[in-house]
Image 1 (cartoon, rainbow, N blue to C red):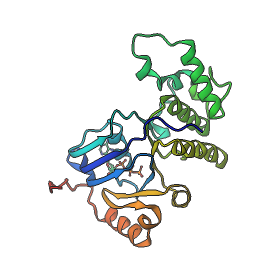
Image 2: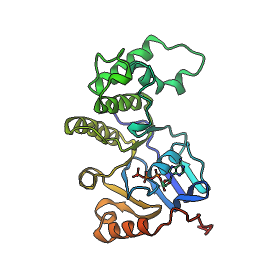
Image 3: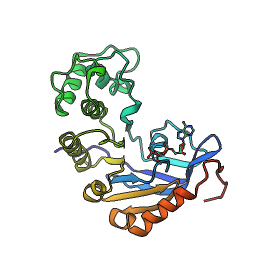
Image 4: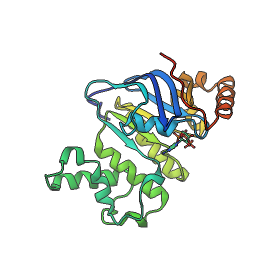
Length: 249
Ligand SMILES: Nc1ncnc2c1ncn2[C@@H]1O[C@H](COP(=O)(O)OP(=O)(O)OP(=O)(O)O)[C@@H](O)[C@H]1O
């Protein structure tokens, strides 16, 4: 297994993310260390997807800051439901979307680009699927396809939003192997997950979110019974109508 060129971290400083005036993530500070493997867990509506989108640069902070180290390349695996499977596009073209930052708008796709996409498809168990329309794939195959797109992005920081959702045990195990490889190569991996047994087994670090950061650190400590109870109570106590406050760091 090769070592990745550039382990990079991400720092959050008093980060607040909102939808309108309503806070999804509230005054969170901390650091995803370079090369760390972190699960982001919490109740429904805790702000996990909003946080991941902000880390990917897709959601502007209301206040506070996100700082990536150096010139870190960041890639996001969105939730499966975010992919428009009705759009008539072949698997190989979905994977090559991951190459666009390097290909640019004006250069055509080269034979080498196509080969990279084919290798990525083979690596996720979709060899021979190059021309298959994405709408004909099962949920598990679609998740494998999104992982193939992530592979060609060759990112320093990987953001995974519920990567094992709606997939069977075999697909889960195959995709988990890729996550372990990325971690082993020194890349920083941050994954939103609901399966706490999986988190306890595979993820050394955990951020427990309930709009506020309830705990952030080694998984066994972060997921203590007391912290989980606190997260649940915090989620239940938040009014959907509450606006964010303006407290300082
Ligand atoms: N586009 C949006 N417009 C308005 N409110 C939104 C939007 N997206 C999310 N929210 C609200 O922000 C809060 C956090 O949502 P988010 O999707 O980040 O939570 P989550 O922790 O990922 O939830 P889940 O576990 O259910 O996927 C929720 O109250 C949600 O209703």
